Image (cartoon, rainbow, N blue to C red; front, side, top):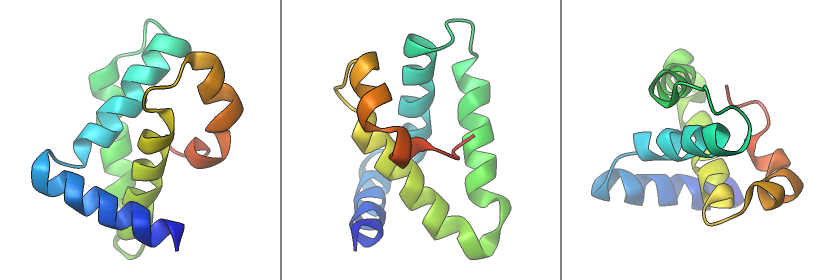
Amino acid sequence: MSRLIALASCVSVLLLTGCSNNADAICDKRQECFDSDLNASTCADKIGAWEDEKESEQDDRRARTAECAECIADRTCAEVLSSCIDDCFGIP
């Protein structure tokens, strides 16, 4: 059920701004919290490629990216570590 909600959220975001913003948000937070030298653009490209890698898993991967981006929004780095590991684990 939560994946369906995340997918619906991603579709809504796509209509307004594009799902790539989810990847951008994830990479910006990674850069802020974990690796100040991270190239956020390259990071976002990797996430986009991962989402598109397997056609049969595209919807699921996009939903996972949306769930992670939703979780990290408006959280401190400490809160991301304690609250978003499950939502963001496995996203490149």
